[in-house]
Image (cartoon, rainbow, N blue to C red):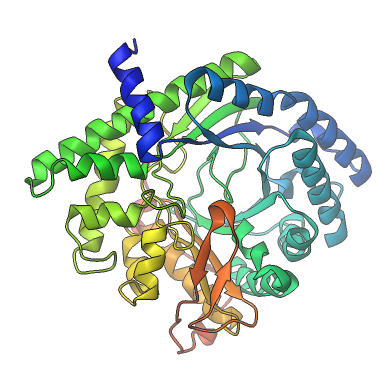
Length: 454
């Protein structure tokens, strides 16, 4: 049971330390919407989503009032559209038509994002998958709330280098088509290795093909809460540091579990998982980078950063799993640049580089996230960065991802501005040497030897 002391502590964390529930996400299976006619598919998708999620916004608002915990986003994730549109989509425009249907659903239901304009191509691309991937730039231009993801590698399957090359080109085209908004389309597009099913966080959310008809997933937050807790043990030994993080993560996750169960009851949809990721925002005091500094670094990116992040990530997970039996999704510490004020500051002063961020992704929950790079960066270089990150995920049996914004017309020293949770970011320099010959090899990088477990 949750006692009055915990209620009072939670209220303090909300009022003073930026505690929030980052998202309630309804995952919806669209497998029953498949048809040979794309207009029929769109009609089926619209009916199903607007029926299943019709009370999502209302339920979220009621829970906010009942418990006094802000719920920043209400979101929807759906079955990867590369599968749903396989029988009906014969052109890129057909897939864009489905994307517009998803966008229409998001607008009518008053949700913040809808994820699942996705393809799973870690072993190879079907004709449908390839068409969807090629349609992403136009879909991102023509929609406002739709998010897209492509999983092109896994520990079991290796890395699909044909898809890696294609995604470099797709990201460049998306940047060009959305150049009037600082290439915002790329902020809604993420490339994965080992993508988890039923991740509630965008842009990578999609509903797993093995999932139920619908499910409730909750993503929590709380960097500010962890940072405040660590200030009370400043200078203490590592055991005390770790215990403090674990206990704080447990409290945060209990709040998420409560919200998830309540949402499940209100919406009559089964509870899926709590994702206990520390998700920062551009707000002062809500930064993962600030936590790293409180642990003992002058700036994020200083020597010791990777070790400090590994410690933080592990203790957050250890604390969270004691608070919920169903922890999943990504779960750990996010290190986006544009969405974290401390990371932005570190990047602007040169303490944090792309190479250091890549090293940090070996131990964090995801990967290279919301990083703005020069608009003239070659597609092959973007593909090389994707391949590097996918290799880290494949070999280490973890989820890694890349969300790069090659901001059209921008160069190092400039800034992109997205606003809201997406924040702003300085343009970071990229290694100038070419990897084009490597990227142009066709086929697949094989799975590592330790993938053969049965």
